[in-house]
Image (cartoon, rainbow, N blue to C red; front, side, top):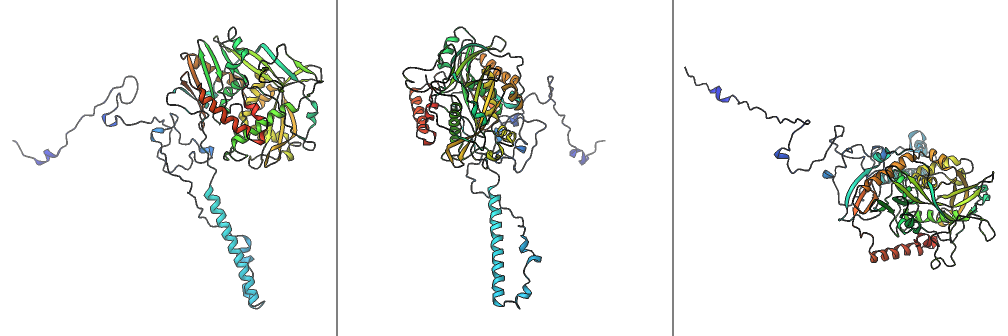
Length: 565
């Protein structure tokens, strides 16, 4: 019997779910149609999702929460939000109640009831004046609070890259600092000398007795410093025919080895010719200038015209180092000198006729890094000194400089240097970790017996042209490296990683650049004619020469910045 039941038409039909079998893992085998051509940002299970307002981003300098919402798979640039309008007019107003000072609270107020009987109208006027002062004080406090909170924490300025990345450059590799910090290449033996050039003056031991009470003015010593890059070095050109297959200078090696401590952008050019690599700095750049407070919590951020701008501080520090390293020597025609077998390879009769050359010696050394990688590098000594037992010791001489302890969040050298030198040095290690590590690496590579540090401060905090020497200190390079947690196994590992990476590439020109705002370095493949345009080179000469030579503060520094060939 057939019954017409209306409920039978309302029963839903069951549709079986289609499952995709993924034999190699889990998840779908192909992208569903509705999700095709949609950008996808990889994420991990540990990522925090769904934040509404980001008060911990890069706009503030609280590094404790800087990467709280950062994905381990990248920066998330697909969905990054960029606000093009100027937000400099935004102020955060504090609406909390301002705490009244004691004189405005009830128990400290004048007894107004007694004002009527004592003084009459004069008493009322004095009471009104006191009340008016209190109101003005409250208004000042309120405006101060609004100004204070409106300014907020100091914003981080977006730093510029040391070189503009061009569209025809291709990125080969990105290496973040946490990865580089885990590299290690142990058991690298001390370098073997393959040639020594130049002559050195003796250190004047009277400077060991300088202190805050017997300070000495820093003198301007007009001597020529040669800052020749690798491929322009005639000795390295000759050695490249018979020795090694990787070539560099100690300054370039120190920059690479200490890259994980750097914040500012820098770049190094690498040329691969067959199985040989040449590490070079670009001509007429700021590579040889010394940074100041680069690793400070609040690095200098003044504009270019201020005497405390990053560039002017770098010029000042370089000026101080050049002069200090020569002033503390025993100079004069009758003073003894230590001469190596070969003369200074960079002195030419045409360029240096009548000019005084800085006391410097060049030690060309060789290291075996394994896997048929042999490094040849030019290292430097600044002076020699006779030890108490009569042995000659080679010195690396550097100067730490104080510019403004209040702006630098430091300690007053004139108050602490003689009694608490450890506190002064600890503050310098915190603010200039990268620079001190590079100096230590250079001393270790050269085989210096001592690093001599000078403490140089401004004569007046607002005058960057006159300085005084407040004291000196010396360390053995190995002991100082241990004190600043400098691991040479890691330093050699970072260098070897970059060497291996470039060795795998085809012959050509490459560039390593530290990202100006992120803790990473990038390796680019660049065209062979990059940085070789004659017109561009001449233009850069004019710019750099103009900036340095027109500054009356740094007389003679133009010589130091020019590459002598």
